[in-house]
Length: 128
Image (cartoon, rainbow, N blue to C red; front, top):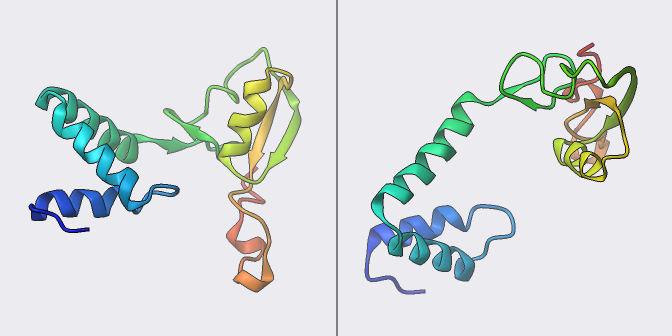
């Protein structure tokens, strides 16, 4: 792809680094942002930066959180003694969307994969 602007090309390259986003989709996203009011784009970029800088990981289960404990672990109505061990935060989101599980979680942050050099030491196994 040829771009008439180095800034446009740089933005497309950054968006295309996201998973599942190719160059064409990245270009569509960038062109969409160019059509928006500057204040909307500023709010978008500030939200992304704030998310990256301020998000925490729950000290109990390793899920994403805004405080020391995530909303799931701090919910006293949940069955604290029932723990679902999951691979990633994405799994927590999927299970929560079913509204069928009322316990808590433990996010490992991956799976053991000797071929990829991932052993138990790289996972959140003993964070309890």
